[in-house]
Image (cartoon, rainbow, N blue to C red; front, side):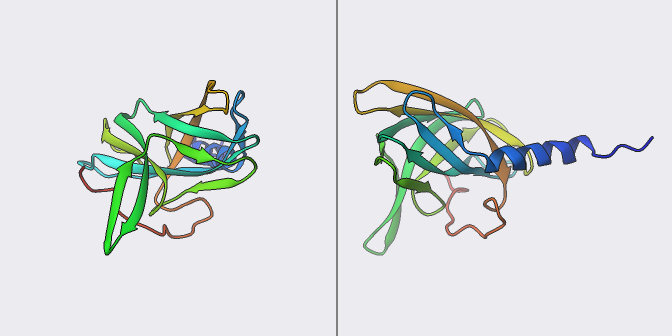
Length: 165
């Protein structure tokens, strides 16, 4: 009897299905859409994770965690004069009802000191920690698909996640 789907094909299908479905954090009511992490290669120690976040009542992304990396930080990239600078930020504001995009060349989750390469068509566990207006924290654990391009196949807009810090 022929197999209809190989294990790898089934895994890729499931990842694609769940990547397109929005996920909500329980306490802070934050919707996560279009999440993906850039694939890495042997010896590469850092990569980025990207997504769109929408907080119903406003919140802040105060940190991120992943067992795949020794260090996980929320970062921003911005031009200062003629130089693109990247730095960790203590929190990312998520204004009520407005979508904040984490994307290459802008805000993103930085996965550093990778414990192993992130292979295309796999997934990486990521926990996002949000804080509401009253200071209450909530965690949302998601499985982020690993790819070379964003969901939908568009080419990434920025670079810089293969460098060393």
